[in-house]
Image (cartoon, rainbow, N blue to C red; front, side, top):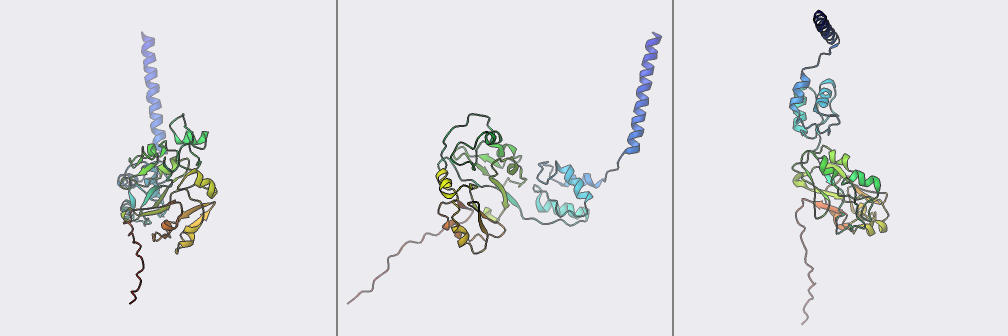
Length: 287
C-alpha cells in the first residue's frame, strides 16, 4: 500500500515538474503576435479559398500586416472594397484591380464535338487526362467530368447536362481561381469582368493545325488569322495555330466575331445585332 502511494506521488510530482518546465519554456520562447492580424482577419471574407495565394485568410492577414508594401496582395473574394477597408485600417496603400470572372474557353459541346469513344473510369478530369487524350477527336477540349465544379466553393460552376460543358454563374463567381487550377486541360481562365456581363473571347484552345482542329470540332479555331487582320486595336495574336484576344486591349467592337469563319470567337451580353434587309436597287423609269 505504501509503495503504491509513493508511486502515485512520484508520478504526480514528475507530471507537475514537467508541466512547470513546459510553461517556463513556452514563456521564454513565445512570440508576441501583432493584434492587428486578428482584426484584419475579421475584415476578410473568411472563405479560405486560396485565391490570394495563401493557404487561408490567416496567412493573408499576416502578410498584410507585416509587409510595408501590400500592392501585390489582393483578396479576389472580398474585392476592391475589402482591400480598401484593410488598407485604410493599416494606413497603407492597396493597388486597385478590375474585377475578374472565370471563363470557359471551349465550345465543344456534344453537337460540335461528337464523341468517338466512351471513358469508363473514375469520374475525374485529372484521372481521365492522365490516362488518355479524351473521348472526342479533340485532345485539347473539356472532358466534362466536373473537377472544376467540385473545386468551386461558391457554387458558381455547374456542368450543363445537355452540352456537357461547365457554365459559370457570374453573380456567384469570385475569381478565386480554384477552377483554373483544377482543370487539367487549362481551358478555364480569369478575364476582366466587363459591365453587363459583356465578353468576347476565343472559345477554343486547340493548337492543332486548321484542318485537324476543324475535323475534331465544328467551332474550333483554325488559326487563319482573319480576326487579327480585322482588329484595329492590336488585341488579337495568333500563335501555334490558335488566336487569343487580350482583354486589356480589346475595345469590344465585335468585328472579329463577324470575321471568324468557324464561330470560334464568341460574344456575350451584347444587344442583338440589327439585321439589314437586302433592298434591290430601283431603276429609273423611262418615258
